[in-house]
Image (cartoon, rainbow, N blue to C red; front, side, top):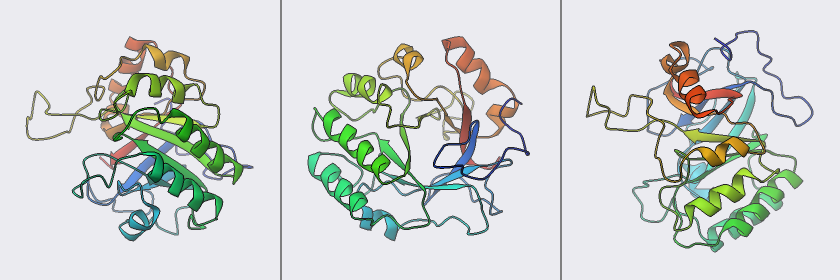
Length: 248
């Protein structure tokens, strides 16, 4: 396996991302329970995930990463499909509040990186706001990734121009397209497959991404059995690692 390597260094060097990335999302409710402090073999990063854009709500619902994990620790803000209406959604106020929290050093000190999950927004025209948010995070020394549903946010009015702009932003260290999706042909009751995620704007724009691409797949099996690499090769996309939702 190109990226699954138990010898991959798990130390963060001088504020730089260690590639290839091997990591996992420690999610509040989705997926399975990781039985060990290291959620997937060879991991050099991990990120919490609760779905909320509001920092206080987010921190209050997190499933914390083990202190024995020595890789880079990220906190992910934002998401999709929150049970509380609008809690996952972005707008100018949500972005401004989060930017102020970052600049005022309110991110818990255990995190060296921030992930921004952009799936839903109540308004269009947020690219300048997001660019300012990413720049603020970098100005405070954080590593930054952006994750979206499939190839673009499913619930954003101007999803395609927004995604084009984000992929061109050099303040993003890597991009995490979410490649799970359902229902699967073999089991309509699960999201346990690799189908490329939501196809909102096509994958051509991803070929010119300014930063590396590190997809998140439902489980490690799809890396081990070659499906992930075959998917990327079929689209002409180069990958620099992977993340998982479950340890299988």
